[in-house]
Length: 205
Image (tube, rainbow, N blue to C red; front, side, top):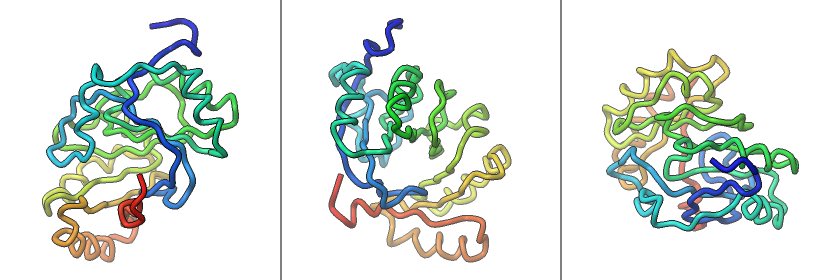
């Protein structure tokens, strides 16, 4: 670990300024930082090239903060890969010091290091979420690839904070099959919501 927060580095697959397409902040402008490295191994992952951390260049906190602040972004989303594999304290604290909200998208497989402003926890069957992550979730987004995924997602609800927003999101390639099931579920369980990958409809990153 490097003691100087600004010099701390992370493997970065890509970074870009766009519109958040999913979940509670859908439609909001946000700067995305996608970290390389993931051992969750979702078979339907649409960014499998992010899995190998060594395949991506290391970037310093200061460089990443400069990229974010070069845009009008008020939100920075740290995603992956699996960002919680890393100590995110240096990056989170430096972004917050320049008045940028920090959101994290994680599978919940690792304890989250740092104090982000928003935690979107999306559990995966391939590496189960841990309680230490579940209890901190602001948003719980279960991706539905098969009808059994709905029942599986329910098994972790008891560990979520009462304020956590709960979503079911159809996996893009299976949306025609699972979306009707999700609609029926949410109509019967109105404390849940539907999340869609609107950025794919808009053809933006």
